[in-house]
Every structure is written in structure tokens, then in C-alpha cells.
Image (cartoon, rainbow, N blue to C red; front, side, top):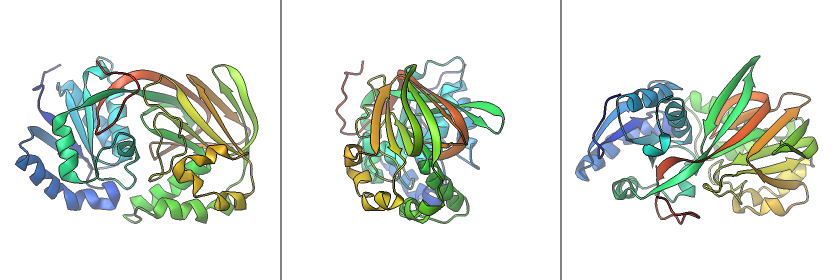
Length: 321
């Protein structure tokens, strides 16, 4: 493995982030990086999934500082490229982000500014934090697959909305309000599915579910706070489950998705644990960090304090060495 400069950043740039906002804004970001005298190399992604390979290769070349210029999906791909490398201690790398995506929910957790100049100034300050990551095992058709995530995984209705949103993005359409549009537009299409949930080997729930989130961080869906108790370095997965309920109740209480108060509703349950197992009678689908994946059965596992990230004005629950 080669060794790159400990100060140089390697930028992984997604031109399609934010419904091609990356294409439009990358020249501006490039100019600011040069004006701020940031030492960096960069590579543009060319297709979905490309950032995984770029990240793996950049680690192999010895890059110690990797910055995502894109959205939550690009960040997820880079995480998977890093975590999949067999010879790398991931906490020895530093991962940062300049938000160009539609939702930018991971950045909300760590107070990364959406203004490019301010985000680059945060990058230069290099205030770091060791956060947890999650690993989920799921099925794609008949094949068992694993995926890492560092923000929120969604199942059931949440995954359906993410899938519809992503299909529109792939056509170059959509925008910041697309997710919210599908929250309501898909409501009466969804069918409840019976599931069995175990937390740390103990039964936690059995019955029909509407939606479920497993979180490392708090925000998803463009600012929704569906896992408000999540602490990104406590070594625990946070679970918010919305049980079978009237779909009109979902419409009535939709605003509670944004302030975290949905957990106070009687049809909502929350859990914490290191391992979550989910089985279902029909297929429950999955998304992680906004990326649409496969279906049940699922096994979630926490990977404590394994990713060093650059943060804005964020107060950690544990000091970072």
C-alpha cells in the first residue's frame, strides 16, 4: 500500500448529486477549494455504485483523508468502499463531506454547513469525531448481501418512499420536496406486513408494521427526525417502529416526523440494542442512507466508534482521542 500526504484530501465528486446539482456547482466548489488553499486531488463518479470502487482504490493508494462532494447516497458508497477494504483500520482514516445532495441528512447531525465556503472552512479546521457505523445483512433475490451505513436505515413504507424517490432521481427529475411528495402519494398503495423483531436476542415485537428505522444518527428524508434518541457514538442501534395504524393518522401526524415527537404516539415503539433481527411473512424492503436495497430477513449489527469524521459545531457524548 502506498502512502499519500497526511494533509492532502482526496475528493470523490458525484456530478449527479442533488439531481445533477453536482454538475452545476462543482466548478464553484473547485474555485473555493483553490482560493482556500486546500491541498487535494479529485475524481468524478460516472455511475451509481462507482464511488465504492473509487474509495477502495483511494485507500489502496494510501489516501488518509477522503472527502465526499455529494449527498448521503455518495457518502454511503464511500463508506462501503472503505469498510470493505480488508487491510485498513478505518478509524485511522478521516472522512469528510461537502454537501451537494438533496437531503444531506448526515450533515444535519454534525452541523456541516450547506454553504460551500463554510463547509470547506470546516474541512480545513479538521475537528474530528469517532462515530459508530452499522452493518446490515439482507437478501437480494436469493442471495445474502451485506451493506454498511452511517446514518439511518429504513424499512417498510420508508423504503417504498425512498425507492420511488430514487427512481425519479435516476431520470434526472425531482428535488428537495420529492421525498415528501411520495410520503403522501404512495400512502394508499402500501400494504401492512407482519414482522417479528428481536433486539439482542430477545423478542421485542410481533405484528403488522407500517414503517421502521434503525439509526446511528437522527435525521433522514430531508430533515425528518425519525430516530430522535440516536447518539452516534454510544455503541447502540436506535430503532423507531410505527405499527399498523390508520393511514389517515399518518397524514394527521406527519408534522411530528420533523421534530421527533412521533415517538410519543401510541402506535410508535422505540428500542435500543447492539443487534437487531427482523423476519417477516412477506418481503419487507430496505434502504440505507437513502440507497434502495433488498428485502427481509435482516440482521443489523453495530460497529462502535469505527469511522473518524470531520464535524462542524457538534458536541460529542464521548471525547475523541
